[in-house]
Image (cartoon, rainbow, N blue to C red; front, top):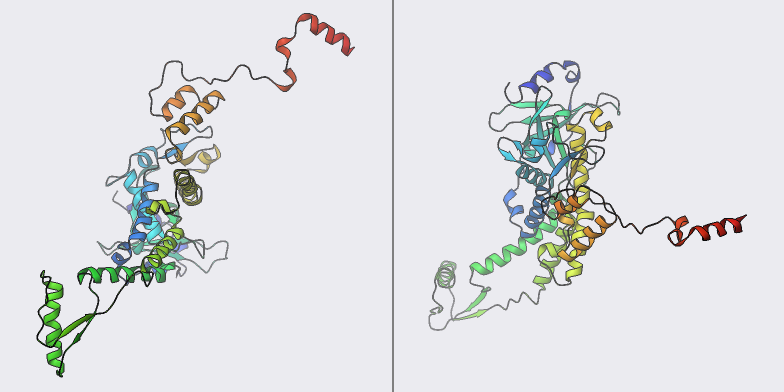
Length: 414
């Protein structure tokens, strides 16, 4: 059965649902963007934010666990989520691309291909070729919706059932069905950043020289003025010579241009921090260490997980639980979980103190602690240890009692 064949058969078998007129909810994704997408990616702060978030999600392993937090490796989703999302993408590449689309376009989509009841793979769809179609004829609590994917290669369109599509929403959402990309919200701010970068590029292309005024005696017509300017530009821009020949009676007076007087650097830096804040990116992740120390940098990494990654992770986990698991599996406690222990690790000393405390309190088994630090398990290490001197409050002092003192205590109580 070819790609999407099962889907087309499913749509044909549901003519009653498709007989009603469909309204286009999200026409924004029906056409290509009119602006050049490369201009947004080339803005360094925006690119850095996309890179941090995409790689941050891509490097986290996604595991399926049962109700007792044991990793499930027999489920048909194990190979897809852990190793290979589809024949063309690794699990890392899939997560990186989906997170990039979620942030850059506001939505990311992946087709869930099943062979029978077995999961075969997850195939990302270009968000620019996906529309959300909603039936507004039904009651507000029963309005079915579908995804329409227009394949740019073959020119064919496919109607996808929501159960067959992984849909991750980015930014904020005004209707609950589709997300909004941050770059549309920051369009004006980013235009200023790109204009500032163009100013620097122009100065570099001009040899870091500003505009100048040419003084001369006499009067030239427009044609001779243009010819004079053109010849001087050839010397100042295209030539490597450091000297500019001038006819007798002419003088060049450069206009004074100081970026410090216009607070160019301060304004550009402030604008970059605003873009980063909209993504939830911390200043040290932009290599801004003006007010950072080691301790503050570590707290910023913890804040990045709590404030930025945790909401994103929750969205991923809930979508995968709903689309890839059955109701019976969810009722048994099955669920997808990202392993965030790698980004929560501190320095070596802190790791030792935390792991030792967990082992001493009986929370970690010995082999679990060794596995966390990358060491091989040891024989008889699957045990929980705890300090034997711990006692209940009512048993305090029992170890120092003798048969005689116990008897006297009983007589006293009587």
